Structures are given as C-alpha cells and as structure tokens.
Image (tube, rainbow, N blue to C red; front, side):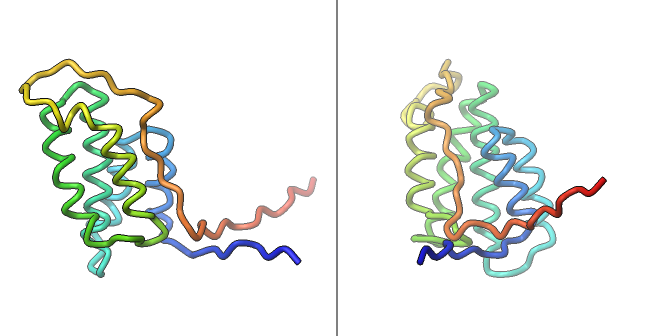
Length: 142
C-alpha cells in the first residue's frame, strides 16, 4: 500500500511568497512576506524576516547592487540559522547552502562596486517538506 506523503497547512502568504521566490520574482516575494511579517507576532517572526532579506539580497544582486546584496547576505544567516535544522517545512541548512553558493562571489568581493553576473543555474529555490496542502479543484461543469 502506497501512502501519500504528509502535507501541512501553511499560511497562504508564506506560500504565495515562496511561489514568487521560485519564479525569481524576488521583489514580489519580499512584498508578500513583508505583509505577513508586519501582522505576525509569533515565534516565526524572525524567520519571515530572514526570508524577506534573502529575497531582497537576490533582488539587489540581480539589479547589480552588489553592496546591498552583500550586506543582506550576512544578515540572512543571523535570522535563519536559529531555526535550523528545519522550520515551517524549510530545510534551513539546504536553503542557506544554495543561497551561499548563489551569492559566493558577492560575499567574497571586497570591491564597493564590482561587476558580477547572477548565474541563473545557481538561484536557490524553496521546497517544503511536508509539502503544502493544496485545495482540490472542483471540475468545471458546463
């Protein structure tokens, strides 16, 4: 008997932000997560702030703002590492490893205005375990 993998019921804004993040729409993912973070007062508040900063770091990197990306790269670890090894379905170590690999040149650069190119093959993605509960679509009846 094959059992379906367990699923979890995550905040819809968290999931919307992940969807935009995985589409490389870092500005929009930051906006969505910021909406969640602004209203949220629970134990995951700094976790959301870390995701927001990760999205903004990637946004800055993609737009050539290497100084901004470098500054945020450092702070993302401070926010997310305290939630390791996993939080809200996110493998923190796996995510930070991919994030660091993507921003390795940014972190290593000592120049104020270096010219670095974002490698699309290295962009981190967020995959939750357990996956999100997805509503079952009702068939359209004509």
